[in-house]
Length: 244
Image 1: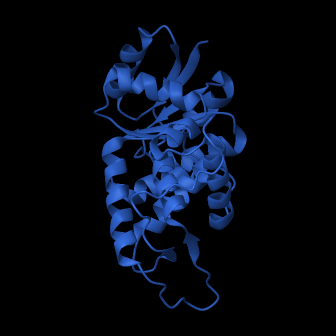
Image 2: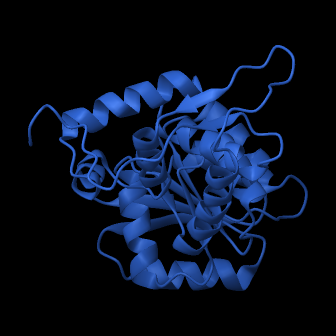
């Protein structure tokens, strides 16, 4: 199966470099490229690509606003942001816009191809260096909120158990249910149960929205409503369903 992609970047050398990098792949076809958001929307309709590689900072409408507009009209397209921005705020906005991937421009050819294939397959992929920043923020948050703090008026806390927090971290890394099962020594069905509970508590519908919410919660520990329960003992295992 061949994956068709559209490249959106306002630098001609970047577009040319990516095209040359990906044209030699047997699994990926570069359907086209363009330099701005207006043309990106037009080509999303005319070319109907499987995946769009898009920069964030462009002339006129930025990539994040462009992604929102494209996905509102073509929800089946997967969008990967290929950018130089490593800050948590940019990735939060990108995921809220509906992006399925966020990687940095120094990515290797093979990692880029792997990312495109995995995103096309339904995964959400975040560059590891960006992920480390998210985890760092998340860790500071976890250490700070060891007790319930007074809430602002009409606000309710998001109460995730330590096990749910662990699974959410793996979710942010882009792991599949099977990979989370292996990393946590839980059965796949147990992982799915935890994910359903996480979605319910975060009031989201899918993995991408859960990741976006996790980034939002980790963005500012001072006004976060993320409440941490007691730490999990080192030998803790709540898998009572057996292995799959």
